[in-house]
Length: 139
Length: 140
Length: 285
Image: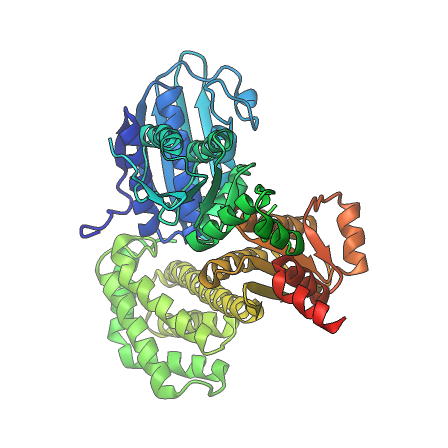
């Protein structure tokens, strides 16, 4: 990294294709390194981002991601917002259950990603798209 | 789209994943490997993921599928070189990679393939004798 | 606790007009409370600097500790508390360095103040309270940092990963395992497996007095993670009470190998790795 990451300035990435999911992973990794997350925490966050970005693409019909460095006074962290305007999730509890899938995957995307981050917030409804915000704090 | 190269070393196909794979690349690798196993008649597949800094559920599923396909085609698959951070994350994610043999590095992976082949060769007396005495080093 | 523009102006004037008297009295008061553990010269330099920062901020307009132009004042206060915390002064001794200014100001106001003396004193007091609290916060933060550093050093010391045999490493765990330490142990162990290419690890918990659900989960996760990497873990030295806890908590150890002692575990691993031990025992028989 030559330019460095402008902390506090959100960085965005559209999710329209397979390659974009790769780009999301790389973007999240860059920001997580700059925010000084430990190697294990970086790995967890990037993995969660990969799952959620794929969901945005496969279930939400594409969308965008916004990555921000946050600071709560004590610790630094990385916050990622995944937004799509797809069909939304009808039964959230069911979607968050391990092993439940409508897309032929392992059904670990949402539930697994939630376990990998410190904060997980989801705003969805049938017909109004899905917005998922996750945060990982540096230890 | 990038393609992951598959190398043939003796009776083993070696795949060393060096790029951050898109889902398409992963699916392509799955197909390519099945074809190469049949074409070469190899009995071992080693997938080196030392360079991968994450394994998500999609890649995890690809690894499981490759292991199952190769089993049907009479080849043993060993995944080698998983990083500690990746392993910890997979445990947290809830992905157990059932049915996949793993080893710390390529060298151990080759030993594992050889040991697995030895177990399955009851007609080869020398090997059979040895494997009766020594317990295998394979992980469960 | 912000001062109005007029109050700020009067504070600046009061402090800068009587520089020598203020610093002298201030140093005396603080020095008495620190009982000579800090040299007069050092103390004087610190308080003069603080004095300058207060005057500069007050001259700059409204004194408000949260304001942007008070950054320098905050920096001076933070530096002062950091220094005190590092040198082992108590929180009270640190805060007094700031609060002592109140007495000095009261004396000054009594002898030089005009009509608004009382109101000014209350306002100045408010500001000094805010500065004192800020000092206290910085002090606590520094101490927390020190404690965290020490805890980390302790962790480093208390979690050795040792090589027992070719391809066998062990972590002898001693003392209480909390979640943070269990996590460090887990990462260290897995990294050692990679670095040494060892397919076997023994986690010896003889020295662990108690195990709760969280710690047991951490150990279990380590074992599963090691398996994903192609290594096997054996847990040894489980005390009777811990065995009871594990069963009572309903924690499933599943097919994880457990042995009574580190020696048993090593024997088990050596048998698994095969040929060598088999030959030896044959020779012995």
